[in-house]
Length: 408
Image 1 (cartoon, rainbow, N blue to C red):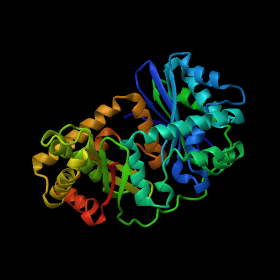
Image 2: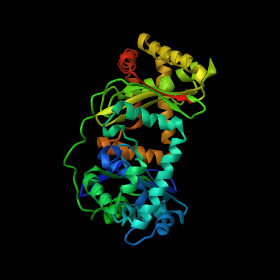
Image 3: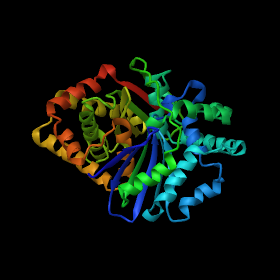
Image 4: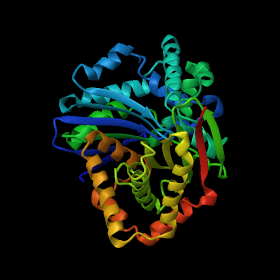
């Protein structure tokens, strides 16, 4: 993979991957998310992601939203527990238009009070709509359960109470203390020369005042397994089983990713999908999720089923976890699991917007980007013995937490 990198004097890093396409992609990734909020700031990172579109020193909301849409492109943003991203897709001749807009909304937003109040209502509606989706809500509730009072446990959206208190001064305070220039990456993919990349990005981002991070994120609190049943007004019983897991820099991260994919990945032939859905017909949605973070991580299994099938489903899931703890994969089984994961990663990279975001995130976190052959080598280096050791550590029944939404 051909990559070009450059660092501006203020610490903002640039990474570009040239491709032969009439379409380009550009994003600004910031190493700040909901995890960086204090308790009274719960939901602030996501709130800022919304309100940066509500007016700058030279643009109103309509002009911001129309700037890329008018030329057939798209403008979007997202917030996670550890990052904020604003990004655009555009025709390559509109590259400067996109870069200028990303800079304008990221550094020149004025946060009009009237617009803030309107957006609070929008986000409160988003929070309420999320509550209507128990299969997503239970994942957040599970992380709140296992992380307890740690910021990692708080959901990204915040609460109606915290959101309603936010004002312009609160926003500026959070940005000053958390949006550090050495924790920002401008990532681009497209048929654009490196010379043009430096020239245009430097023109708009080069004058941003340096604001370097002085402290590191604190360690998470000590984990203790939790078991909780919660009565919910749902049509199904929803269950999450999981444990804390390897962080972003752990050498066994590729192994757990492979294990998670084998157990409950997107493939229809995952072990949990075959045992719960195909063989027994007692669940429709089944997945395992591995989310590595700075200094910690989460692994969990989710499934939804009817109340009368809950105990049977739990026994099947526990049986599949025990198989991985007790039995090594055969040579062919391991080869097929590795080949499947490598194929999924390769297919995902064909989506150039996803590729741009993946490159940017890797450069933001590791200051490097692994090529596909390097990623393949990491996956191929995972042995059956290693997978079994990972299973015995992460799927240890004494360390597993359970959260169940039972039907009311």
